[in-house]
Image (cartoon, rainbow, N blue to C red; front, side):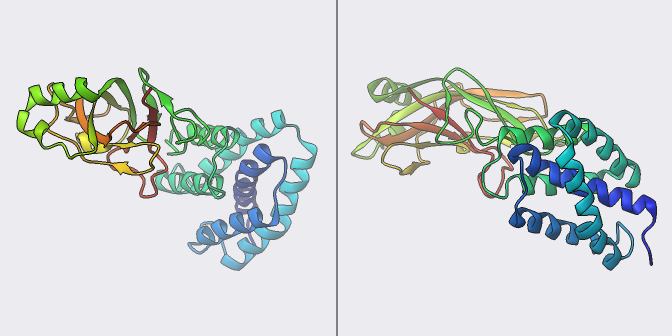
Length: 291
């Protein structure tokens, strides 16, 4: 059955928004990137969201794709940005404001932007702009941003943003100072320190910025330590008071002390925050340089 003009307009919009993620950021779109986009569209077309499966796929990968490529070659970046809003509104109307469809589409855009393992600031800008048009959190952040990777960690004294949370290390101690703090909290815990290790005491803070309107639990196990010997330290001791833990709603904040361990004298220390209900692949972790 031939596609309607409304279905063709919606397919063009899908093509446009997918294409924009690559073209705006890179100035080009290679064959492998086109293959990724086409594979995502196939997943959508199976549910006949765009009419007949064969007809919609043929239009998407043929005439519809060629039209988008021709338009991108003649438009400036400002033109592309303006068109993003127009095409996003066309999809919103086509889906009748169906939130699940729009969320699914934004998630696909996020996956496409992250296909090469690095989300550039430009790619994040585009996905955020499309998601904001639909009042949806895209769960995507630039991997080049401070605090988002071991290569570009944040610094002590600041909060950094990740999925549903902001978090940071406010102050920290090591060596004898940290040992004394742990000892004062629980002397038996302090005496259990293994040979070749030292305590780290971190005063940390986390603010819940998103998610459902129900409390979410957060504890010291959201924090780990990594040093220049590249061994992850998850163990510690009984935490000093006030202790970091809580059950918080969106907008709530929790702060307090945690006690961790590292090798004696180990350098290059990073505190790693893994948010509750975080991504299975660790892409939403935060990294704070302890120096």
